[in-house]
Length: 114
Image (cartoon, helix red, strand yellow):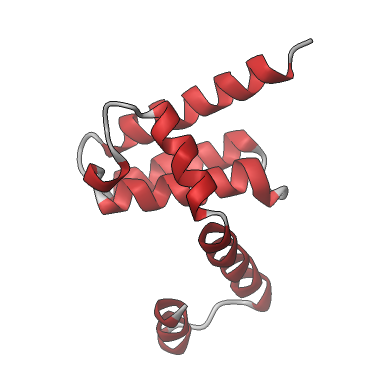
């Protein structure tokens, strides 16, 4: 949270945006073990510790939003995660992030079918 506090001192956010950022950070921190298990299940060739830190962070936030946050539609969260991968990740990040999140969504759809 120190990073967020420093960021907010440099460039404040609207109260709504700040509350959303805090919710994401708190949610990821509180659910990190569960989120990491999901990532590991859907990206078995990439142990979590060997993933690029940016890819891992983007996946954690997106999965929290999709599976636990309850406010962001999954397609929006996936699109935003891919865009973050383009901006901050390596050349392969957008495709990797999209692939993992797509796998999670496909699995969730199969589990919800009767």
